[in-house]
Length: 321
Image 1 (cartoon, rainbow, N blue to C red):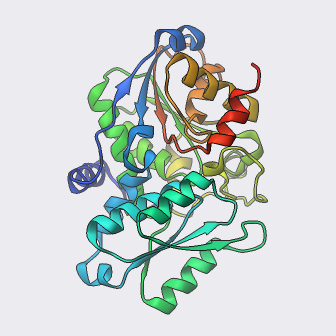
Image 2: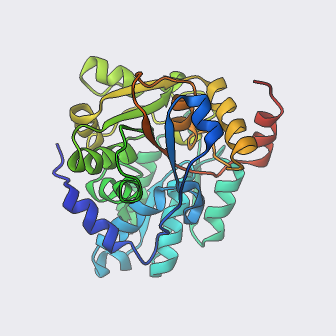
């Protein structure tokens, strides 16, 4: 297991303080009534770039040497990590090349380009994004910034939970969206170090269940590219760094349906006036649809992002349920 400690998360929080926002924590009586618990949302949809990914990207680039930064960075991402790397690279005057799927949400693609990054499109069904990124890094001398599978990324993502637990005490559980596992790993390190009795649940779509399968098999299982509306949770295999952390510390991985995500997005938007993308709403969906074990009275929920195309949102809000 990668040696990542609470001290690393605290150091990351101090390191990135001038770049990231300390995002709000809020609650809703209507949501609490529907979920059967007192819920506290960590609004990473209000983060710069619209997602928690800025935390890990900032910690990574700020942990690099100046000589490394002078050669630029390259990464691969469906959108939120892409935007995060582009934002931090612009702040630090670092050249950034982003490998993004050609079918990435338009809002994420356009935002990433607007921050000055060079976009290299790829076909997610027939090309390997990591291989493309590594080739570009090798040819250019740039540093590869992985979207989740690195100790610096994990420590940075853990700062969101550190802030939440500093704001709200006595939480029985946390519900965290689960894609590559960077956010969940950072959450586990922060939460379990501060209070080992706090239950922590990862949440992934039923159709993108690489984590559930991998934990059941006790090894990293790869799945085909999943067809889910949660574009940020379309990972096909747990990370080499994140898998052992999650395996050793997580209480459970919960599965949600596509319709449950849609219903939760509509609930958050119409009742709380909060915009969450499908990936960002995953933790809330598990809590709203009572997937957590009974008896958990105070639950923290990370809304990991709010970047969603308007046409996708219109399709979701035009549904019923």
